[in-house]
Length: 223
Image 1 (cartoon, rainbow, N blue to C red):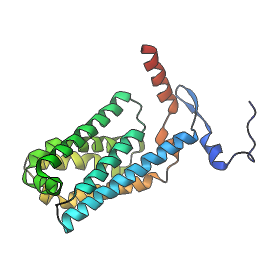
Image 2: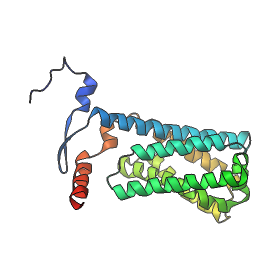
Image 3: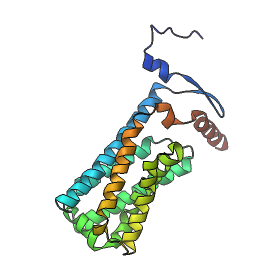
């Protein structure tokens, strides 16, 4: 097959079609792959901004009517989990299920007390954390994936702080209303992680595509 000359394709296209050697053979990073990575990174950035905005309103304005921020957070994390590249399909599906359960818990909370009282109810009745907890478990999984793949220290903060703070609040050791600075720290770390991802080449987020292809081949063979 004749390779197109540089005059006929753009630099971006050349990079997108670059051939890589993977564990199970050669593979190409396509333009579609890069668009998926961009969508994932934008989703994580939107998630970080929404969480920070929610905390700012909760702290300096009021805990009422944080619902719109929570909706944006739910959408952003859902999109991020749709575009995220994880080798193991069961793990990917588990994170999506946790997200769905957490969103369901949030909807139940909003239905029970009204959107304007979601924040106040979480403060007054920590047991509601169990309803929305799966959402934050999915967020923890996203942070763990980023640390495991890229060894980013800010991802460690997200992975550790989220479950720790929720557990302390659920047990009554440190109530939510006293955790503000630590939640701000977690949100800032998430924002730093999200912004930093745009400096990486798309191939880093895609990983070894030959592994995906081999696992998919095996899955179809089993069928």
